[in-house]
Image (cartoon, rainbow, N blue to C red; front, side, top):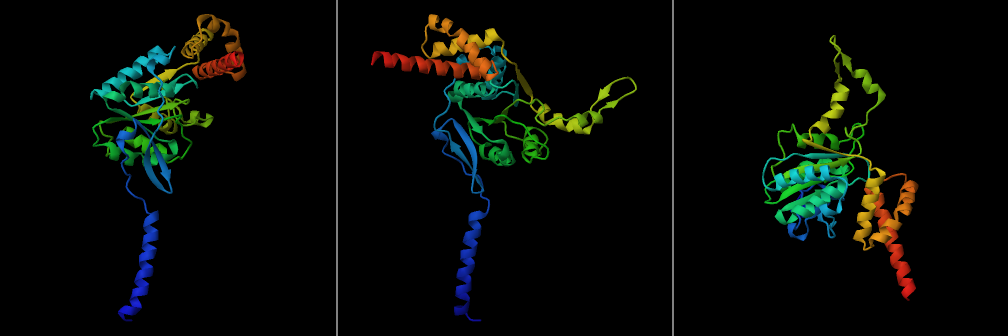
Length: 297
């Protein structure tokens, strides 16, 4: 076979290689860090990338009420981290709608001017967490990797990746990165009745969990700081409603008059949470603004 016969084959081989290269995994590229204080990790066509968040939540710590102990603990840990002092990965657990995610966003806004940045990553993409850690390891900023509503089912791949980064991997996370996660489930993995069968009783009456239970609680234990949130009482719920109504410009008389309606709103939703209080305040403020506009027209 002469050179002229080989040329068509070589051209075809080059085209095949070009197509294959488009599907091969590529190293995670750095975003323009100046575009935002918050970023989202996304996978598109098999490739991961960090996308800047164009409209970052503006919530502030002062906007969050009735969670003062939780607020103080997370603020203190974040302040230590931003100052370059030892700080812990944090697991925020408890009742839904009580401000877990909002508290993390508020901490970002508090410390963004001091170099804090946030990277949100979905549970399904945690297998790529080592790539994110490697990308930011030499950056001068301080990074919080934010995993919202985190829980795992049996056998999910992201579980082991997160567990290794938190503690136990040869390639540990750099000191400019922490993981903040929220969950309604304290142990992050489902617990079943059959797990209780693995408990062992000793002769002196002590109760020891078996390997199944130990594995299910080991991930949670790798978070150095646990912050628990609890359902709000009626007075706490009404206090949050009043705070948000004041935020939207209602006066004291209007806020007092709205209390019965706020309780009905919570009853219909089946929850007295901060989220429900905020939703009620938005609804009422919007309706009052529309009524006022219609009356003046």
